[in-house]
Image: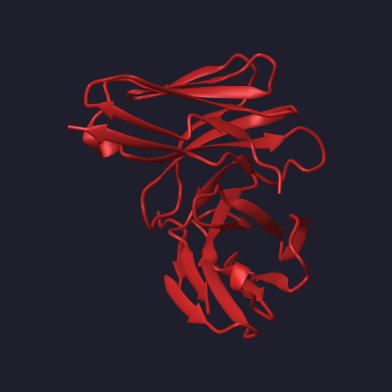
Length: 113
Length: 113
């Protein structure tokens, strides 16, 4: 099935560093969502974006909906050990199939205390 | 407010058998979607139910079927299990007022041997 291009695949950083990851698509999306998944758990919604150019924050997390509507990025500032996990971008395509979410393959984040 | 709950959490089945997975929606949510997440991948959309009817389907064969009940809970049924069906199965619920945001349960880990 179709998946978004999410990068990087994995990151290993020191506690306190900032992190940036992004997601691109070949088609236009009308909604971008960012999720975090811990081992053995379901994805937890972090941020939802609804308009091109929108910049939204949730604590130390900031995400943007790209102007072309084909990309999005997530920044985490001042990382802490509990930020460890897999981060997924997900989007709802424009048009008739907007009932489904298309996911990226995830970015595995490891934070060294 | 209760979140999305799924049962069972783990399941082992033999190839060729049938399985039923269950999901209770988050309070106030009337739309349920099912996703399959293979190891190391992002979730893949299976189908969505609204008002007890399937209103969208991903690229999965007919042996994947579902039900939604009047209380908005849902079942995923898989017939003639194959080894490749081994995955984490995730249920997500949304409210019709905000279909864009999907909230996930913890998932059911299905192993087919």
